[in-house]
Amino acid sequence: MIPTQPYMPWKVSMTVLHVVSILSTYLRIACRRKDRRLWWDDYAAIPPACINIINVVVLWLRLRYGQQPKQYRILYSYLSSFCFSSIIWWSRISLALAVVRITPVFSRARGVSLWMTGAFIIIWLSLLTTMITRCVTSTDWQKSPSTVLICGPGYWVTVASLSCDVIGDIFLVTIPLYQLWSINLPSEDRLRVRLVFSTSLFTLISAVGLCIFSYGGVAKGPGRLIVWLMVCHIEEAVSLIVCNLLVLVCWLHLHLKPKREDEVEDAYQPHARGEIIDAGGCLDTVDKILNDSHMTGSVSRPSCVCTTMSSSDPNHAVA
Image 1 (cartoon, one colour):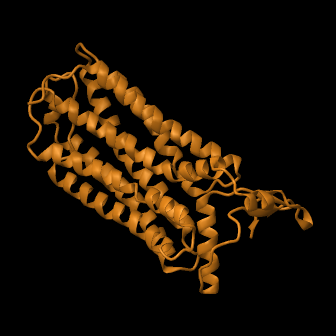
Image 2 (tube, one colour):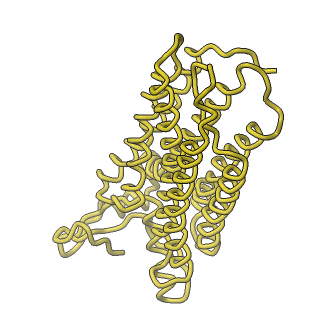
Image 3 (cartoon, helix red, strand yellow):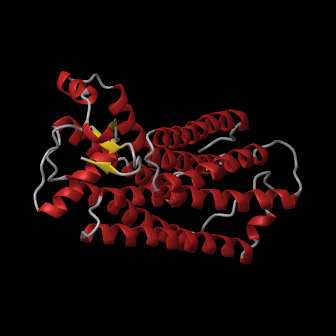
């Protein structure tokens, strides 16, 4: 039995969690922009962060004591549904584009990754349209005397959404792990990259938890709807943090780890033809190794994790 829930502790805790997720996106974009390595997966992480700002505002407007106008309560429900679907699926779209980034250009895995990205966009639009349509056509939820109106997605929409969650997250984990399995990286780097790519499972765990909470019969009492709403917010924040975790972990490891003597010597050794050193992220290192191995038919470890760039063309990285 879940008792009546106070609003303020939930609003503060969820706001902190959402701020962390938004800041993770800001740090990601800032780090990639600083290294001049922004790509489509980074741009795709911007929409969910912006929508999450709206989500926080709606949270504070929605959870207030006292009777609010009915049209406002209905509007907040629609906005929450939009934010929930958009944050989760755009975070997955960004992860799918990160998988595209590390797959060789002419490989079958790249085609599957591109197809997966397009499928995520279609799923987002389909689920969002279905939820909004159901809330418009079935208006019983609008007659509730509760101060917070919630239009649930419905049983079959939840089943379809969970099925898409499971399939999508399995693809997001298995494709990069398959691509990285044969790369001859140092064991520490290999383990780190595999673990970070596997963090998509956290999003899946939160989605399964939300489904069990909704239809498992484990939550009863006057505070059930508020706790259900907060579980949705937790899933949103986790999705956005997981989306940015790979880039941030790689960037921090690259810039904060103590350099070995051979790396320091290589980094400061002058190069001919005006080439300069540009410290790339592990995504870019993996991307280069995979593409080189696809062209040559073998996988080898690079002599240095640093990459060089011609000063005349700062966007073109060479070995």
